Image 1 (spheres, rainbow, N blue to C red):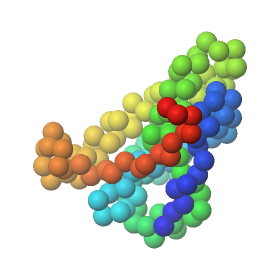
Image 2 (image 1 turned 45 degrees about the horizontal axis):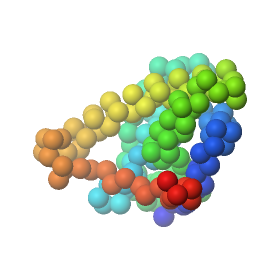
Image 3 (image 1 turned 90 degrees about the vertical axis):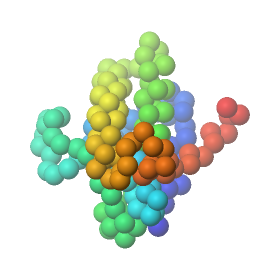
Image 4 (image 1 turned 30 degrees about the vertical axis):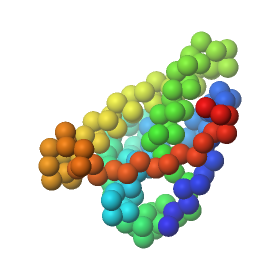
Length: 153
């Protein structure tokens, strides 16, 4: 089973800024959740990517535990909830002097990717749900539990 205990809990602006500026926010694979069968749902780039190819295809893949381990090994994947939380932290700090141009750019790319992920997940649900999406009993994704931040909130 993959290690999902990575520490992405530093929600200070400096912690988020360092984490986000250390990845490619458009191409970083994000763990969306688990299926009812225990498979991993990952939003990632599909196919080869080219330098400065911001419009290459991305989408949702489902991996069994063995496939996930083969593909990602011991790499800690950021969850979608953590990604959104980091984007929200940057959004709240848009006017903060610590927000440099790189971080602002990453923030905007994250906002665009979150919109794209919403569309991709709707397509995924439509392709993998035997009943209409309005029926809550057809939910395919089980959200991951995010450890508490320890600040009492």
